[in-house]
Structures are given as structure tokens and as C-alpha cells.
Image (cartoon, rainbow, N blue to C red):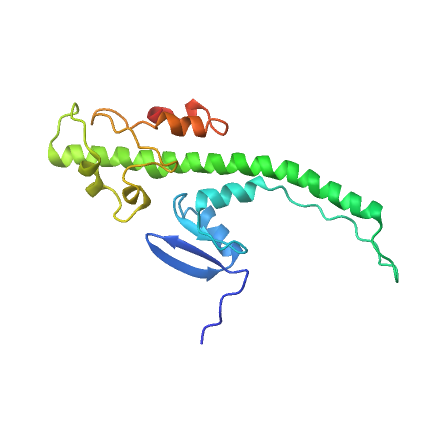
Length: 202
């Protein structure tokens, strides 16, 4: 009989299938070897929510390592003094001031990476395939319904009806053009990435 997952077990989802439990170390090795892409999803305790690999990697990099405070031998029948408690609160405040802004920027950059890799590049490839298989001219402007058969069935992009990770519609353009990132998406992620980040999809 299999043992129930422990609180340290991690899970991952790839191509619509879930795998696990595995250890955090095994999960990190799968990501480092490229066996899990940025759009695949993982669930790592203590969180009960599924996040993309891009989000998970960015969050892990954003939080600085915590340096343990030196521990003194406990004295019998002593209680924490007000001074010690103030020092602990101050240290926690410093870590919060460092980690929270870094975490927010990292999450926004991870979202931008998903828009670029899981949205724009997939739509660009779908446009090329649609044009070749249907012998369409480059001046033709496809509809979202035209491209849906060439995208991953059941994927987030098709389920969202052509909206990107920020919920804004992808600008398809003609078959001879690259799809473009919606201005509202670029504006929302401007503090994490500049216009050059989007390359030909800007």
C-alpha cells in the first residue's frame, strides 16, 4: 500500500497530466534539466495552489536566504526581554522590506515570460501553420477561430479565448505580421520589463 504524501512532497503537471509526489530536490532537477517548461505547473508545500514553473522559479530566486541569528544557551527560568523582542521584530521587518518588492517584481517578470513564451510564440507558430496548410496569402488577417485548431487543445490559451496571461486580447495582425502584445499588458508589466523585452512582438 502506498504511503500518503507528506507535507514536503511536491507535484507537477505536464501535458494535462499530474505527477508526484516527488521531493523538492527532484522537482528542481527536472526544471534544471529543462524537462519542465515555464508554462508547466507545479504545487509545492506549504502552498496548496498550482503555479507555473516560471512563477515558482522566480519566487524561489526573489526571496533572500535567511541568516539564522546566533542562539545563546538558554538560561533557566528566563523570559525574552523587551530588547530582544524589538531586535527580532526589526530583523523581520528588514527581511520583509527586501523580500516583498523583489517578490512582486519577480512575479511580474515571470508573468511577462509566460506571455512571451506561452502566448505570443504559440500564436505566431499557429499563424504560420494555418497559412501553409490553407495556402493563405500573407495579407489575410486570421480570426481566433481560424487559429484555434493549431493550438494545444484544452490549453489555457484556447480556454481563455485568445486572451494573454493578463486577460488582454492578443493582437493577431495579418499572416505576414507577428502577433503583438496588447498595450495594456505592456503597461501593466512595465515596472518589471521594458519594451525591448517583447522583441518582434512589441
